[in-house]
Length: 325
Picture 1 (cartoon, helix red, strand yellow):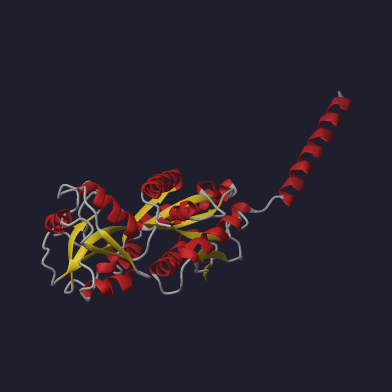
Picture 2: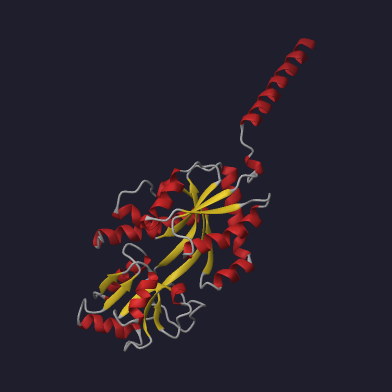
């Protein structure tokens, strides 16, 4: 009896020791985040829309994570965001390196060039903003409706100049999808950024343009928005009909969110996703984004991955039918 008891005690002691050793050799993910700052890599320059979003969301994310969490922004601009996306994909998957993620642009880059990442390179935390595209003309334009603009394009295919911020992004895809839905052709004219495209449009150098709705905010006296490319009207432009309302089944816009390198410890991933989910009910964040013309649209985890896959599929099909390089 005593031998059996002694053997049981020895085995129990060994088990406890093993557990203690395992605890010593396992990172304290339950305490995430600790004193180490969480770095958010932004693949665009400081002051741009994605950079501003990261800084605004970062301060609210700190509050949700608690533990005196610190979020710092690191800008790595270049190659249309590719440098930043690649840095995130290659980073250590410990929760201390996150990155902003722009759809459909991030996935479009994997089709028109060699990229060191793909859809499986990331853990998808949360989309935060959805900024639908619009079809716009200047206030001096003879076109007062989307129907009138498309009719002009049909009469002389390729004659209607369409300003784009760049090729291979949501502006470009909006123009291609609308042309396909209307069975016509536009003369696509890419610029180096939305501001230059807008300037060309206001200067009368192009007939129309497609840009994110937020990029029309503050230019209401100069721009006439003919359509919003979304499934419903925007609260920022409630009087503007969607393209669908006008007979053209087109949706496109810019989604901006946050990802991490693939392979986060499950507890860390859950902690981050939970924090982002909580932001959906943060009125201060919603109001701050609204002041910039952005709609808070929290989509997390597997749902965010599905959004990525759907946007990637759109980019792939357009690349196959209209390669832009």
